Image (cartoon, rainbow, N blue to C red):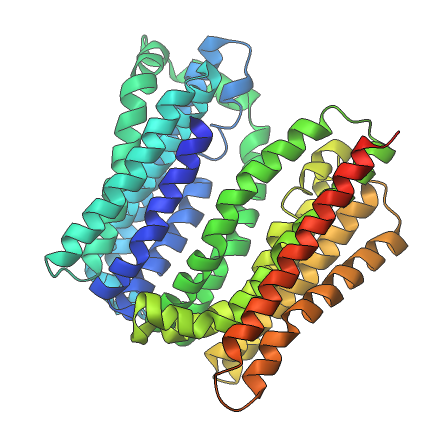
Length: 467
């Protein structure tokens, strides 16, 4: 049920985009993207990581105390946010090219409080195994957010409709989960209220705010800082195009990633840490490459026209960004299972170093592109840097899993060249005058890709049936 809700909720948001892009302007959508990115960064810091050990603590009392500490920490951060946002709201709006946000920045502390408290209650629900409650809360969030944004858009509201819908969705998820799982442990931890006991619990778990929360912040920053930088250099309208492109390409991949990662973790736990892990990680990487590379390249070729048809002519620029981002995002999808190897091999410190380097490279790419004044150059450099870092990261993980560098290089070059070959008929048709070759070329590319998949599955079945 939890997996189903994790799939349905993002699907609701994705399916609503063709309607939302006709109700809201790109600049409004961009201001909303800047708000969402700021929210994600604040939420990563909001509980200082005190919610992370809740599911694994032996003592129910200590887990209840950590839940209360998390809620108090979130409330304090939300209150601390309000004053600077109120005093410097005009400067903040101008900084990120999102003056539309200025009257509504007071909603950010509200959203941080709802989201941060939801994370804390979610940790408690995981401890209790209340997966149906978590599933209902996630579904409620997706449904209420979409319904509110559509209804407020139909009423003619500007960016407030998007922001209010987001806050309503987060609030509904919080209420749904807190009502079922969160009230009783909060009462238990606060009766009687003992600041000293809470302080002792916080001290015993101090490693989480000192280490885990910063690791989480770096991970979030590597994704969200790009949105803020695009706003800083190019304005809210460009952020709207960038955000929609990222959502449309990454959204479906993220849904599939969850199932892939869970399946690999389940298999990896039964394998030895030597040759079996190396073979399983490499084979899944190869299979995902064959599944994903050709559709990503085909999508990149068609993205501007697809975006114009689905989301409206004013969003064709988002299709241009999607064309640039698709290769990087598909590489992220292909290697989505590999970070599990970091835990199995105990390489968390080196992974953190990689995350910091990747963040710095993305910031540099967006900045260099902006110095030349071209948003497309910024996004193109961002995508190129992401491709290089992701390929390096995946190669490193495959290597520490036990695969040789030569085997990894042959796989990357082989799958990449074959994918380019399968897509080449469509590219050749685009170079020819007239449009009569487009559909036959697309048909040839798709059929060739499907034939290769069927052939791969058949060989795998024959291999598995062998002695």
